[in-house]
Length: 75
Image: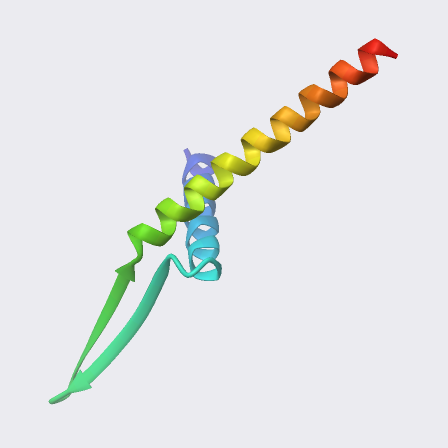
């Protein structure tokens, strides 16, 4: 059970780290009258655009590998 919790925490940290690096998330805070508000914004359009880029890159890489395998078989 402990290993599962550690694994899930690690996944969350990796996703947050990647999200911050890729500008999927932004954090801000405001202070007034002795209280502080923290805000998190999620850029869904950026996430979707990055997802499509990754999908396209994977398809291109797969096609290149298939072409290379086929050309190696012919030789």
